[in-house]
Image (cartoon, rainbow, N blue to C red):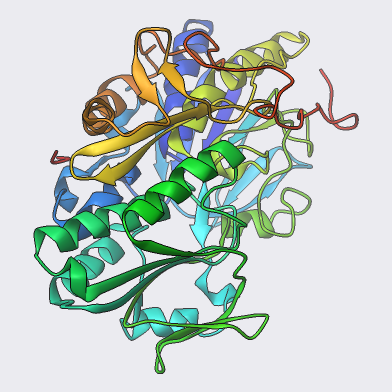
Length: 434
């Protein structure tokens, strides 16, 4: 009897999982169905470039269905909820889609209403973000009109999609205003709830130094309680205020709304509790999770979904075969950090080891934790790999899901080591971007 695999979400994680599973199970007659609310797949890393005129929105969009193998059924509908007790996905129009294995890949969504005044400030164009195509275009127009003053970039809370993106925005803004000849008239401030520029100490020091070098002020430990779009200020829970003339505020993120309507599926923020090594949910053994939808302690970034894919696909096959799951995902994360002026940094880390200097993916490769033009071109050309290799489920030569140690200056057990992420003891068992 063939297995019915239903995948919720046709973004990065859902698409690559569907195509890889088709390769593994298609000959065995597995029925793979993907459900999403529209047919527009957006290359999200490119959104960062839109406000600075370095990418055009129509170059970042493609039909979702065209990224899936033709044997995969695509349903373009809204999801109402998941009935995990009946192994059924209920669509908004009442239709039910049964499954043997469910994969949750619906990512994360912006939740500006969780911060007092933020939705109103965005509506009046006093505050902006760049996490959707429309918002990125509106911000492009706002930057074009901005002739000087206080630009504030604020992260309300973590986790967010691509944790380095707000820093990249600061660096690109520095370049952008230099290009326009008005950098001396713009004060750029980065406001974060973290105690430094980034979550990992060594990378935080490197990125903090880069902020200083570019004359970008850092305000750490700031927990945004409200945003006043009329008086143009951020107000912290501790009473501190940060005034602005133009603000880019990254709202809180949460899981998809339907998760909250699905009894027992998600946590208080609508993320799905997930084993951090197998990608099997802690809700039901026949539910797996990939990408931003999972509550694991890894960055919500496209590279994470890519690396999670190996473990997830292998374990779906193991589950169908009644075999022991493979706890192989190590939290591997890989991020280019655009720093302006045609340069970028690259960081590579996992659950146990923070970003380190060296080379990636081996002794000969891209420089780590160091600005270089090579890294910039790596980020620019990755878009081609995204559309033609990553989404299709093909292997990218030299890139493996397990974090490489070759080429890195890693001292195991030293300050570079982070707290090990253990498997839960409870839960179910068996230059232009175009």
